[in-house]
Amino acid sequence: MRTCYDSKSMSYEVLARKYRPTNFAEVIGQDHIVKALVNGINAEKMHQAYIFAGTRGIGKTTLARILAKCMNCESDTKPTSRPCNKCSNTIEISSGRSVDFLEIDAASNTQVDKIRDLIETVEYKPAKGRFKIYLIDEVHMLSTASFNALLKTLEEPPAHVIFIFATTNPEKIPKTVQSRCLQLNLKTVSDDVLFDHFKKILKKEKIKFDDESVRLIVNFSNGSVRDGLTLLDQAIAYGNGELLENEIKSLLGTIDDTLLIELIEHIIIGDGKKVFDLLSKIEELTPEYDVILKDLISILHKISLEQVLSNSENKNIKSLANKIDKEFCQLLYEISMNAYSKFSVHPNPKESLEICLLRMLAFNPLQKLSDSNNSINEKNIVEKKTPKKEINSNQSKDIPKKNFLINENNDWIKLFNSLDLSPFARSYFGSMSFDSQVNSTLVFIANENIGQIPENISTEFKSVLESKFSKAIDIEIRIGKVMNCPIDFEEKKKKLDQDSATADINNNKDIQSFLKKFKGKIKEDSVKPIK
Image (tube, rainbow, N blue to C red; front, side, top):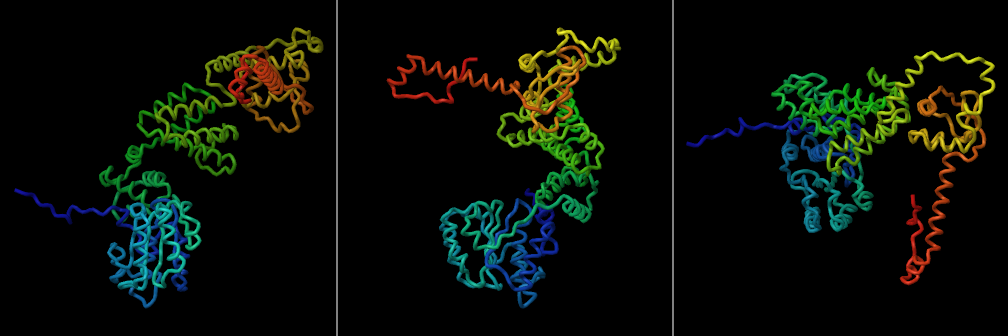
């Protein structure tokens, strides 16, 4: 016994096809393109060839089909910007059965022979419509020979022919082809437009939803209408005809922003243990690691904008913007973007994310990842709580030699090289020379182009010095001529060591004899001093 199924009862039309625009009025997010095409049709000034360029799923093929219907619609005696979608020409174009509208996939027809066959059909007049329209999708994938074969036809096509090239990569189209076409660049659709569009569709489909679930789908669409509708289809199936925020988060692998905001907060503080404890909590939600990184980048972007524009309504973003230094925020953004750009080639996604977090902690200008920092902070707190003995003013006038922290510039160079400072602090204070000590204040000389030293850098330097000498210290910086600063001293030492290493090579008889025998020479940059 055979069971028969009714194909009609089993059919389902996906949302991307069901809600594909059939006229220019239904197209969303491409007003600039629609206006140009409508004005051209109404003025009867249509170009012979078009390039529709833009990312996937934003309406390149849809616009091409609508344009074809406008040119061949039978509801008027001339092309119209409002196709009826009722005559045989428009119906056949919509269903892909029109003999006057040829859709060609360049990805599977790259050979020059295919293009030559196409060119041979150009001279023949359209069978039913006014125009014969050729749509070549992903045209950038054609071979060089194929493009060359098209050139003459593109330059002087018959009056009844219109070419439309759709591409996601217009840079790969030869300039000779681009110069013969009118290029229209489609934009990604804004989140607000997509949000309203998806809500209208869900209401028509009578699907129960909440705004946050739709917003999540919009965020994952990246401006692509087709990608968004495909996700919407998937979400409806996952939720059994209902869209709920928690289920959509589970489907998309997203996590609550509050966990990531707390993660960034601990990065700012420099608490590595809590950062990785939070990462373990986040991993329990089983999100994709690249999604975690993308969300971190998004939050850092919002913080940066808040610091400049004060445009956020989120209290957490405002709080973080006040806590983090602007320069450090930009550094975190660069570290995360660099990690994301290399994410796909990393052998282990989890390790890629962990290394990114470790770098964020390592380059924190105020705190270190090491546990020694915690003990320093505790020590400072104890010192603040312990009442200090009052010093007679007469005693402070003449500080004995043994109470001097630094006696001369050479002492400063030795001290600087022994300090555990962040790269930022080393860069600032390593370019200064020591001047004098006044009571418990160390006076340094800096060049006039040093600019304003960030407060967190000064705080770090002062904290490290206080822990080194176990006493309260003040820092004063004066503008003047810097003489023999630690960085210059280090550069001079490196040069002397390099010159010494080069001299040793040049004076070594065995090496020089070997080079002479084999007519060889040593690359200058390959000579390194022995450490």
